[in-house]
Length: 113
Length: 112
Picture 1: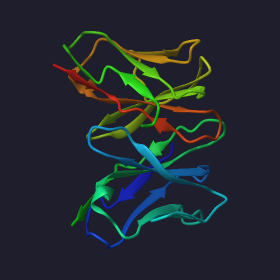
Picture 2: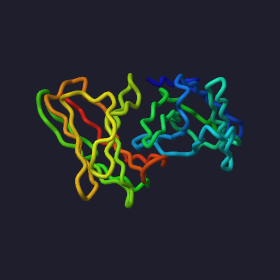
Picture 3: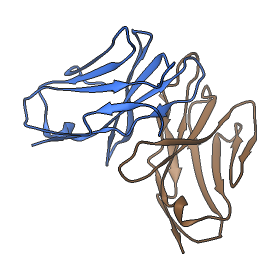
Picture 4: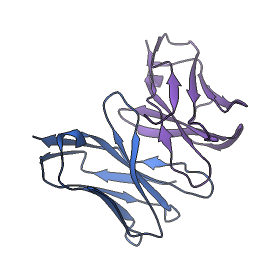
């Protein structure tokens, strides 16, 4: 089955700096790669996703890049703000009509004011 | 707010007992997924239903079962509970094929 590795497990940045979180996956059949943000006491919230036919996607301060050959994808957050502090999860999905997402272990991002 | 509603928010019960967790998907979503989140295992896929029918099974124990009703709400039944079943249980829903998943805020289960 699919295996998703996520690094780093914790990340501290100064407010205004950029943050990068990286994930690798094992199953070349995976074709859907979402990123979720989880705040304390809440469920994961979808923040951006990318499909395998796209190499990069951007939404304001958030961007995701995908390298299918190397089987890795990354989340980039620019101009970080304190409210970006949360746990971020990457995931990989098998597609084919349902998304049985396999999640990474998460990255705890702390943005220091 | 994702639009996915889970009840109860917290549940404390004893080993050997049985509990039922409930999920109401977003309006219009036909697919419901159940995930378990624990500190050491992260988010683990349990089971998926689409329009009342089971579509996929993940790492779901035989002591656990689920169903999706005609009104599309879903219930996850956990029986013969063990200490190790203590975790957050999330429900997610999607419109259908190739659609993003939207998660509820979870039910925190504590087995004592």
